[in-house]
Length: 430
Image 1 (spheres, rainbow, N blue to C red):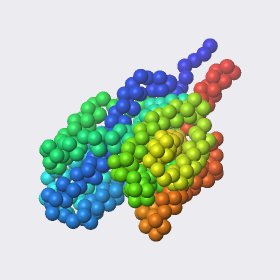
Image 2 (image 1 turned 30 degrees about the horizontal axis):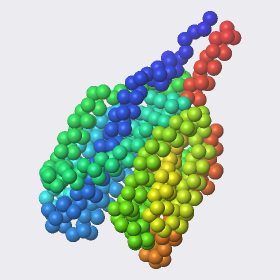
Image 3 (image 1 turned 45 degrees about the vertical axis):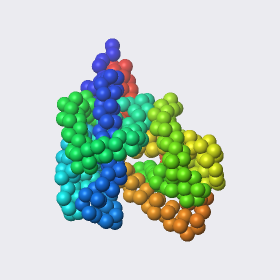
Image 4 (image 1 turned 90 degrees about the vertical axis):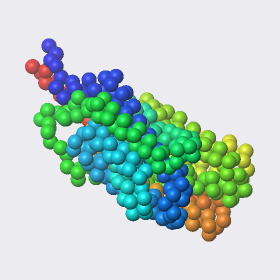
């Protein structure tokens, strides 16, 4: 006679099978879109802000630095907080705080006030990422987690497209202050709906094995060799992606006298293919039964080669042909890395893992635009600049070679399987 599975195992199975998991993914995705739009809005509105407040260009750049510092800190703090109070609460509180700071920035009257508000916006704009990854990890099992996180990661690309397509027209019609007020109201409305609709996974308060219930793993257990290597590999991947996104247009204009409009079109093609490749590579990793290490190595190797090839091109037609390929290379590694980091932490520590890893990735990748720009200034060589970019994914590839995939796949799903086998074997022995 077959008896029921342990309560927590049954709850987890219900979560993984529930159609509501797609609603949770939608809200996590929408939160990331809105926070990214708020983060990118300043780049579009900076000139208007500077003219209104009579600030020099250097002072406007300090606003970006203040936001970035807050953003990096919020990834760490938000990740740990997510594991303490849950993804739903962290997501709602984070978006609510972002709404308030965004709305208030529209009332900025001085450099100091703007600096403080940008720092607060950064502090509230990073926690939603960790909360979203946490929720997806809880609601999707390993067989669907790759495609779910792949879809989640499309939020950044959608936000870039929306920001550049809509905000210039809006600010021209309503001004930068009302634009920030409008963004704040939109984000506030979303925060309220998010708090009402989103729910934690039915198994979020339990572990898979009843005897371990209520025991939270220590933070020190997160910092395994695999986790450290994933952090370093992500630095390399983001080095290439951020540097490519930041410098490609300028390098094409200065290096080969291609117009900014044509160079922007090349980058747009790369961005669109990158957007489509995120869920595709996530689905592929699920189809391969969660074997994401080999795919990550292949994607970083492909990105490295394409950066070197792109650096040897010199005319618009060749850039247009290469654009979709380098776009795929630039973006497919990120959902694979995020998924592996989340699985390394497991549902209990997915928030901390995602937040800490992203803080490391963002901090490391911030060096890339500076060094690539310096390399081009000294060498005046298009190929040298892209060779510097290629160092990042090559370094990431080397780090991935030392990761043990068997260890990185010790997630809650493996524990669930063990619990089910143990329970059934005990039942048969009776």
